[in-house]
Amino acid sequence: MQNTRNLDQFKTLPGNRSVNPAHAVELQNLILENGNLTGQFPIVVTKDMYVIDGQHRLAALRELGYDVSYIVQPHANIDTVRHINRGGRNWSWRDMAVSYADLGNTEYEWFLSFVNKFGLSYRCAMLIVGEAACGGRGMAASPFMAGELVINDRARAYEVAVLLHEVLQAAGADRFGEPFSQAVVGVIKSPQYDHKTMIRKLTRFGYQLPDRAVVLEYKRQLEKIFNKGVAEESKLRLF
Image (cartoon, rainbow, N blue to C red):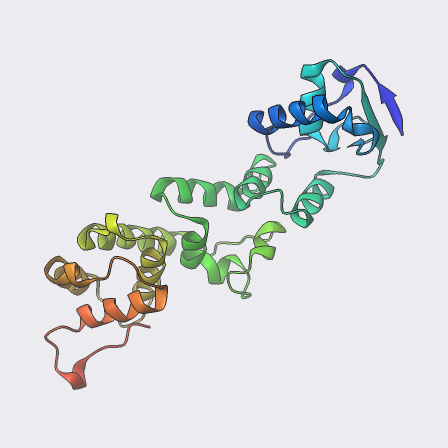
């Protein structure tokens, strides 16, 4: 372990997430109360002084004018950063996506743009692109977090997102939460789904939807509304 007051030699690793100023301030207060934490928890850097672990500690110590204890891992890289933070649950899906996108991964660039354009949650977005995105392994977070995102049909994903937006508008979905959006995506992806019918029925009967329900119950209610006025033998299953 080495010690230095020359904090300018430390560099930000390309693909690493940005420093959260609020977290850095919290660490400043912690350091003022408990002393320089890097003696026990040193900053980890590459041989070229790129910070692998501890950029928030470094930011806090820089503001306080303290010295820094650090250790060098010669073979560490951005994958090391991701593995550290995946294990510690410190990085969100967005942190990972930004990291991969910043290094030129176009799948993650597109995914971030897609989520932002339609205001989707991660889970809802993965329901839309999930089968292709996870290489046949469903919606599990680990392939996404490991950089394995592959979206084979971007046009279909956009189509489903547009249909989702129109259903939410027709249902007056301001009063519903995330489970309703997830249910709508599941119903839209049914081979039996007809969008014009759903919009027409929701415009008339959307008031019958419960304000709160789990995803499965919302699917049942959407199917019930979709089949209103239809003979029993002609009703369609949407999930």
